[in-house]
Image 1 (spheres, rainbow, N blue to C red):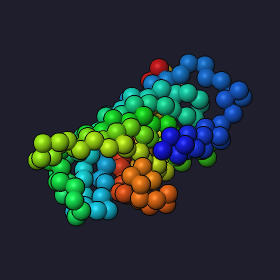
Image 2 (image 1 turned 135 degrees about the vertical axis):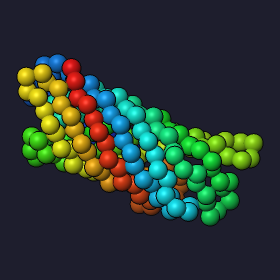
Image 3 (image 1 turned 120 degrees about the vertical axis):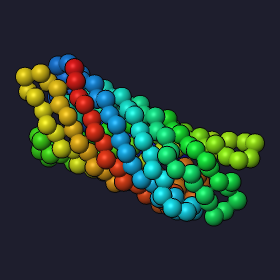
Length: 183
């Protein structure tokens, strides 16, 4: 699993030459995200609400931390007990591809853990990861270096984290993020 995360983060960092693009003053990104996950072995969708804080590590890349809450219960087809409530904590790396100033495509990878509260005595605790692609729509004030970003995205939770195989998917997702970018 560690090798998978290192490869994904390496792919995100590769398009940027950090030596050529030094940051004058890195900015912070405060974000709120609403997303829907569709568990492959479950019933229905899971709505999640995420709060995040990130910092620019390059002119087009950020690294941050997120905390997510599952807003709906999850029921599974297999021998996993139903989950009443879930939350996750993850680190996220995001890289803009540099295709435009106000509208730009990004790729992201996140990894951490997810905890589910079950009816049985044990809670469900699993590794968590996601990879995605999206579009960032940016409204920026050049005089204050502040901005508001609206970012729709699509992605998957890869099955390799759960021994389902390298190319399997545990849950596709779609989300909409509102970000405030400030000094």
